[in-house]
Image (tube, rainbow, N blue to C red; front, top):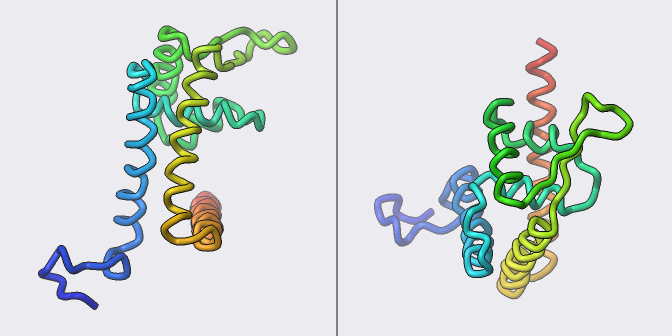
Amino acid sequence: MSDPTDVKALTADDIPLPALLRHARYTYGGAMRKALDAAGYDDIPGNGLYIIGGLAIGLDIPLGQLLKELRVSKQAGGQLVDVLVTRGYLDRKADPEDRRKLVVTLTERGQAAAATQKAARMKVDADLAAIVGEDAVKSTRRTLGALIDLGDALREADRDE
């Protein structure tokens, strides 16, 4: 282990995983934010990237699930959606099968922002793979997936108590 008093000598092995995750998140977030700003999408609120990116995946992920994953209140989630609708990224309509439900989709502007965001994310992915190799990136994805599953299991166990 490196000398803990010499911060510049610390390696990734010396730093707690939660700290690494927090800092790694900024690599993606910073790259996506910079690309979006350069393309004229500089008015997307912070959590808006998650909503736009999640809706763009095309897996019919319910908006409610995305908001739940953000761990924001219903009020904060509703305000975020309102801002994204007002700024032209989302369209909100009544569900034709159940008028009590709302369907939220990406507008053309939202789709363009999502494409910009995806391109920036893919560039970071490619740069990372060039440094550590594709197998290491795949291993990291599996590890992070397992960590997410562990968190889900722990929350489920807490609910059962």
